Amino acid sequence: MADDRARGEVAEAAEADETGGGGGESLTTVIIALVANALIAVAKSLVAVITGSASMVAEAAHSWADAGNEVFLILAERKAAQPRDARHPFGYGREAYVWSMFAAFGLFGAGSVVSVWHGISVLGHEEPETSYTWAYAVLAIAFVLESVSFVQATRQTRAEAKRRGLRPLKFIANTSNPTLRAVFAEDAAALVGLLIAGLGIFLHQVTGQAVWDAVGSILVGLLLGVVAIFLIRRNRDFLVGESVSAEVWRRALDELNDSPQVERVTFLHLEFVGPGKVFLVAAVDLVGDETEAKVADRLTALGHGVEQHQVVERAVITLSSPDAETIDPGSVGVADGTGTVGGANDPSGANDPGAMSRGGRST
Image (tube, rainbow, N blue to C red):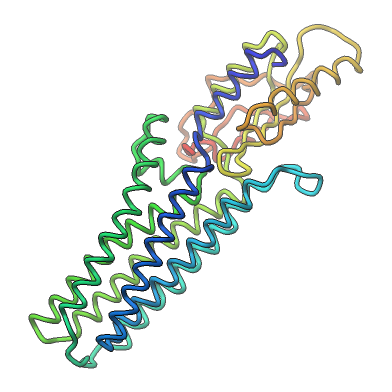
């Protein structure tokens, strides 16, 4: 794969698995969400002062917490973009998942727990009459501002999902871009939550029973909890190591096999080390019968060639053991009910069909 054609095609296969892993558009999406949440927090705080509503005070605190979460996401984008160095040979890409995890915990703690606790605390207690006009006004303003942020996140999601031939929701669930996933999920939950809150206030108004307001707060908290747990789980998946999809893995294998430099491939693994960044490990037999020193030079050149592409953060290519079995592309990704991709051998030569575990997920 030292030749430009093979290098480009393998890199293209990896890029097809994750186009636009981060970068300027994701940062723009987060900044828009930050501005929207800050404005919403200001509006809710003003109404809380005017009406003295305990529910609106809790909503204001929730929105300020959301704005704080966006700061974590901006840090995720900035820190993940740092170039690799001697202390971090695989780059800083996983910083994105660390800071996104902090934001998800913030959503759970300041959003879900506070909303549920507040709803439970006011159950059975009649709240004083408040200005429903101001409450509806701030909910309407919040809905408009959240919609602006959600439209930006949806636009980016649809564009990237279309390039990969996926439905937007499937793309969001599996993309390696944690900031886009967080903004999309939080904005969607916020819009649904505003509708629930509005319904709770309306039922309180028409029935005179504050229990509906409390139930609305609890339901919003449970919704935010589900979203937070989903975000935490996906960030954890990428922190512990998420491999590329079986389809992209097979495409990369095919391109390696098609290279005039490579006779056969006995091991291949591509794993995300950041948004849109992969670590490639392969064991190959090279064409020809050269001295050990020349083979080492060719393998080094092969690895460096792969790393020239922006998607590949690091590549390690070794020489296959003589008794290592050649990977059978037809056996890779066969559905076995376990989500495991089989057919990859250990680079040392030991047969290990489970070496490409968890590759069945489209990421």
